[in-house]
Length: 535
Image (cartoon, rainbow, N blue to C red; front, side):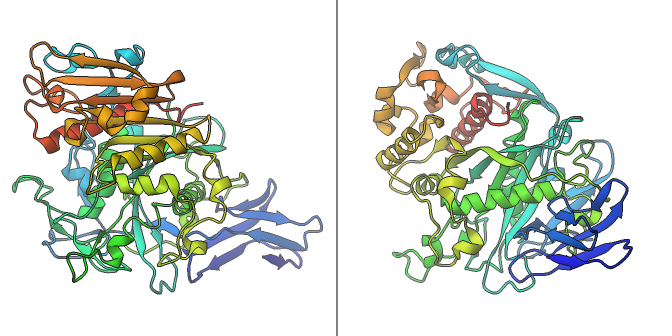
């Protein structure tokens, strides 16, 4: 927009409240250093004659999620309409208002994070199979201090405008590494987008499109923890967003890695009346994020939002993240809490992107590997996608992380998944992938899962002499463009519990526990192997 100026002026305030986009605002003032603004995404130009002011203000479909404190803990079945906040002195020693999940879990616990690495070369990833525990792997320890390493933030994406109509609003969890204390405004951004396991579980309330009830802030009973656990009563979708951004992933991000982890939270789709036939919501599960266009739009919106919030700018910390200082009402825009400044910097360009899957989310990644455009159905492409994913997304999607995915009749067939992964991989010399499977998902016989990839790989098997069932293999390709680690569940079972580091290496894990342990091992290995977040 162009605003005429007549004579001296002191301040211009612009506020827009569009139907399909989040409210936006900017304050503009003249000064000796140029034109000042308080919104980093706003482009402001004062013409040479000082008679008009041209203002460009991108509209976003994303905003910070609201938070709420409650006087009495809610009961299962309640819907707080916001993320549950609480005040606690644990674990930093100071009283703070934060997402309650960070107070009732161990996700902020400072300690040793142990990640499997290829530091000894890919053939050395697996060490002595007869060792009682961690001696079976080549590993690297890192001192993890979550309160300093980065910060989580909950966002709402989609129907965040003044007229939501029949559009959904998705919860999105992100975690961003702490920016450097000095240096310039970032010009590039690396992101990992993670498809979480299916929410078709009893502790996730089912919801029907457009998901206005039972999602994303209901309170339920957490049957996965003991009854005396502080997190027994919880918000399952909030827990999911934070578990896979902060709890399971952030401890392994190295100090010199600068990246953002993005977790779109997908609601439990309500089944139809006929149990033999999937409902429309079940058929559309994972949309719009299971397409390249839909995922590209989300990551673009997150990138612009972070720039608007001036993430990564010198001297700006993450102390207003974590749900801190968050009122129940929405701010005018992220610029409201920012002072005026003259710096005009374009948003960082997307440099490298990785898509990651774990467990039962393999069908979503499988679809993304082959599906560029967003089908209209419930998600109009002009609101939920980008028009040119071939150019705006595909060149930057350089890594795919397969972190103990299920490949079977209930998810996606292994042969189809392998073919799609290799097709994606061979389409660019810049592409890389990582594979990991436990015995729970077929890791005891990985050649049956990925026969074509095995033929292309260098392979080193490991077999215990004391237990015929304790075996593992590591695969790799030229220039480490791919690496795979596959372990039978006995290989993932320690002789005795080892709890002195994260993740704990437990004796006699259940099939589900071995599956979860392999996922965390694979995350650590992926974050060591990846090129994301590094120069």
